[in-house]
Amino acid sequence: MPHCHIVTTTTHKTLRGPRGGMIMMGQDFENPYGMKTPKGELRMMSSLLDSGVFPGNQGGPLEHIIAAKAIAFGEALTDEYLHYMLQVKSNAAAMAKAFVENGYNIISDGTDNHMMLIDLRNKNITGKDAEQALVKAEITVNKNMVPFDDKSPFVTSGIRVGTPAITTRGLKESDMETIVGLIDEVINNYQDESKLEAVGEKVNAMMSGRPLFV
Image 1 (tube, rainbow, N blue to C red):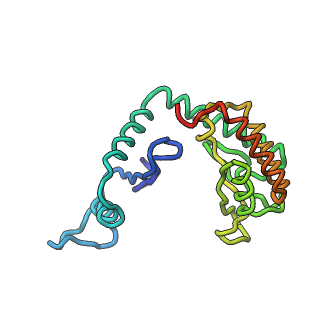
Image 2: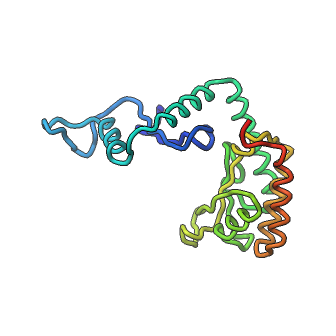
Image 3: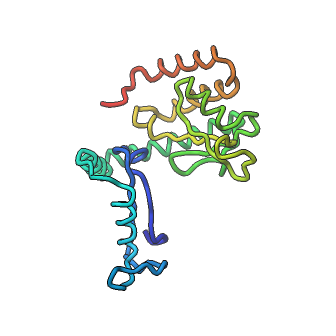
C-alpha cells in the first residue's frame, strides 16, 4: 500500500466471505494525536487501531467467522478467483454501456471496477424511490448520493449498482443488457405495482436456474 497509511475494506461483498471488515496498514508509525501509554511513551498507531476495535467496538471472537474468512482469503489466492474478478469487471463495463445507451447518467461516464454510480435526476425519480421500487421487483440496489446532490442522504438522487453477486451466480456480458432493461422498466413505472410485480416474475424466472450456493 504505497499511497496510504491505513486502508479499510470488507470481507464480504466482492471478496465473497462472511460479513466483516479489515483494517490494514503498512509500516507502523507513532500516532499523530499525542496519545501515550501509562508509562508516558507515545503509542504506536497500530495500538490505537487494535484498541479501537477490541474492546472498543467488537465483542468476543466468533470462531466460525474467523474460519470462513480464512476460506475466503484462500479462495482469493486462486486462479478461479482471478477469472471471477475479470468477469466482474467485464460485466460491469457491459452494464455501464447498456445504462448509457438507455439514457442514464453514470458518474465518470462508465466504470473501471465492479460498480457504477448513477445520477437519476434526468429520470425524475429519487434514489430512495428507485431503491424501494426495485426491491419490490426482486432487484437489489442501494440509493446513493451523487456529486452536488440537492437531496438529503436519506433520499438521495442516485443509485449504486454492482456486478459481483450476479457474476457469482453465473451471469455474463450478454445478460447485462437484459438486466438493465428490467431496471429501466422499473424506473419508468416505479409507481405501477402491477408492472413491478411483473418485472419481479421475470427476474425470478431468469435466476431460477442460477443457485445462490453451489
